[in-house]
Amino acid sequence: MPPRQDDFIGIHDRLLAGDETASSSLVLEIGPRVEGVVASRHPEWRGTDELHDAVVDALFDHIRYPRKFNQSKGTLLAYLSMAANRDLLNRMPAASRRMNIMVPLEEVVELADLPRNVLMKDDEGEDSGRPPSLPPELELDEKELKVFRLMGQGERSTEVFADALGLGDLPLSEMRKEVKRFKDRLKKRIERSGGTLP
Amino acid sequence: MTTGFIEKAIARAEGNEAFVGHALLYWRDRERLDRPEAAKLLGTSISGYTKAALCLIPPQHSAAFAASVDRIARHAGCDPYRLLSVLRDYGIERAFAEKYGCSVGILLAARDNKETDKES
Image (cartoon, rainbow over all chains, first blue to last red):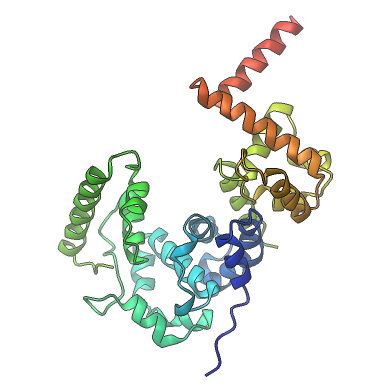
């Protein structure tokens, strides 16, 4: 099978190389495509602030942490679309989320034209084999949602979690403790309420 | 045209000091310019202004600063000298604010007070 063409990899490479204009190209050239993919998956959210915010979050996260993207796992468009899709699911009101969260993620993969086996492996989760989900009755605050999203994205860096929690100024050892404490507490809450961990 | 999405992206850049948009907003506040006026002074269109705003600010003290600003100006189709001046002013005032522990907003307020004193 020939290697899959990633039309936007040049922009990613420029971002990695420190080209200051790459962020602009990313937002203006890939952003609308990401928006299109996510909007076609959730037509009822097309044109809404929530969808726009989810796309902008995915793009700006990538500008900040471009090295998290692994080219061998799929295209940049698919990676960003998945991130925006996950973000949007977390923004949805509980009832709407319950309807959408259980839709297999491979549908998103098809929209983004990614190799199905690669993304399925990435997103199924090592333990449960099921996509991460939040029970509708579980109310998470902004920090908890951020951490849940990061866990869902496979993030492992303590610094990234600490940044999301506003703990970036703590010494590393203390940062590790605080992040671990927060994640453990969140995991317990999700498990107790019947959700699935990322 | 996905206006809503791009507007949000610009607002995000304006709120993040890593982006040229943040420096442009600071300049606009100081000079009391709206976006079309700022674009005109930069010698570009609104679309060029957007392109510039979404770029990252190059490190101020690097030897490549001017070359980086030139690259941004070409990307946005704007006047490189004007953009250089905006980014330099912003960098200087920001460094000053950091050194003396005040925000750039306080410097703006001080400037405004001074102008009010002159007028009265």
